[in-house]
Image (cartoon, rainbow, N blue to C red):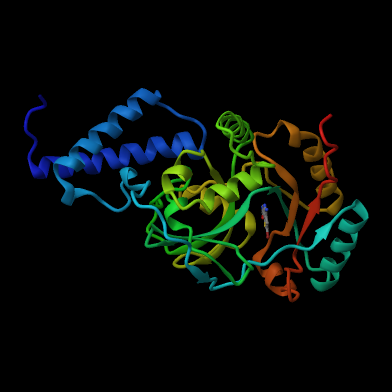
Amino acid sequence: MAEEISFDQARERIDELKVLLDKYSHEYYVLDQPTIPDEEYDQLYRELVELEEKYPTLVQNDSPTQRVGGSLLEGFEKVQHDIPMLSLDNAFSKEELQDFDRKVSQILEDQPYTYHCELKMDGLAVSLKYENGKFKQAVTRGNGSEGENVTANVKTIRSIPLSLKEPLTLEARGEIYMPKSSFIALNQQREEQGEAVFANPRNAAAGTIRNLDPKVTASRNLSVFLYSLAQLDGKEVQSQSEALALLDDLGLKTNPERRVFESIDEVWDFVEEYQEKRTELPYEIDGIVIKVNELDNQEKAGFTVKAPRWAIAYKFPAEEAET
Ligand SMILES: NC(=O)c1cnc(N)c2cc(Br)sc12
């Protein structure tokens, strides 16, 4: 029997365990570079559960044990986005990318600019809000102006930290997705249980996020890639590449397959590179997102009614159905 531990000793140990478990969780789920065996993580986690059971008043809202809520959800309340979640104009050829570049060059009146290229995830778009560094709310894109509050389900996604490495208030946006391997395993399980299978990982992720039981969501191994900062208090960034570097520094998960280029021809090389590589990636992508990198240039370019003038999505040709 473990010797009796006092309230103050328990509080100290709970704080230590939270720091350790957050660190190991970041290494495993965000960096994909675990430094301890799973058994050691599980042992620390069990110790935290026991201490919190012994002293319930010491349970913190952002404790790793608080990810999966107990109760079934009634539904999803509607939430207005402070800033609309717009879609992107599409390009389907190198010539259309060159047209886009000519327009950007004209709008920026030949001021220097660079392009930030990122993978276009095939998942579901989500907005994450943190207040003073604490995870507060997750909302789906919905119709762009209004989405659904999916906080309880998103809280179960281990690659989404419940607290940031700095106490900042911000809104980060990205894509929730289901890795290909998890999609295959889930469909096998559903087939064995005589349930309808999901058509693709995007539908599986969307169906999982819209499930009314957070325990089901927690069991489905969803992940996230964040790709934009919609709001940021108390810090300044000058470019998209700096914004993503800040997300990394705060402990948020971003996609590492990204690069800055000076010309649309180099962008096209990147597009062709990933059109080849996409089948080897552990998640589905359906194109490349190309953004003017400098935020002052983005501001100068502005938006049309439905999309930014400073970004475009190159869509890969639909993959031949695997025979
Ligand atoms: N990297 C990105 O910006 C990105 C990736 N994947 C996506 N499905 C989307 C959608 C918009 Br809108 S942006 C974006």
